[in-house]
Image (cartoon, rainbow, N blue to C red):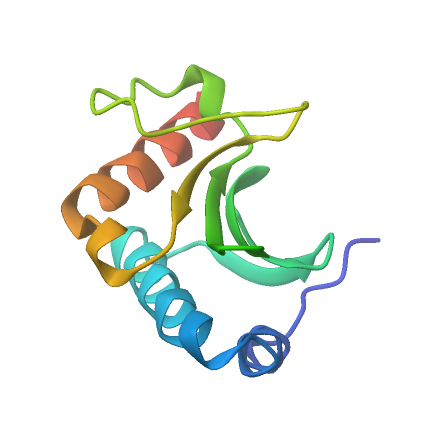
Length: 119
């Protein structure tokens, strides 16, 4: 049986990040939660993950910042061609600074990923 992680577990994940990554993670989390109100937020595979009829997206710490990834990223339109994948990783966007965050674009990707899971 799948158990839902509490929001506190995501808070704890973010609190453990280095100071420069905390604000990036908070922004990504806010964008995800504001893009689609009914996502289940939990910690899976050692990363905050978001579900709606299956896994939608996640963010995780990387050496140089954060990865904002999509479990079905290969199927997303990604007109700005920001999604990358290496060595079998899910498709993700590398975020090293606040300037790398495009709120409108990221919100569209989240909504498109949710639609993929609904169909």
